Length: 74
Image (cartoon, rainbow, N blue to C red; front, side, top):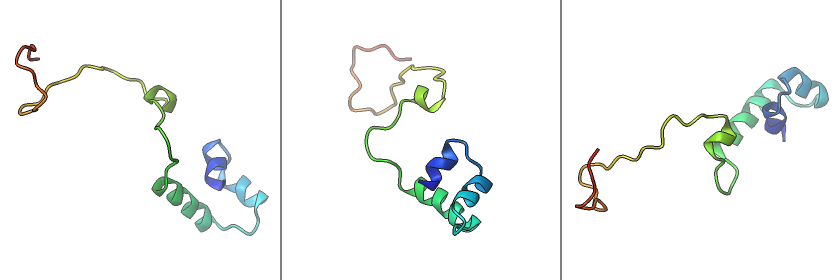
């Protein structure tokens, strides 16, 4: 919950004011825990994460067993 508050824009001072028993180290550990334990389920699309896709070109790698003989090489 603390990491979610920080992700929504609350700064550390606001969190400490609202939860006086917490320390700066506990807030840091909350960030680390959320990074180590991501939410379950399908990941967000890149556009939902604020990332702009530059290219969606697919490249066939050498030795790919799925490579067809009739396809054009890029």
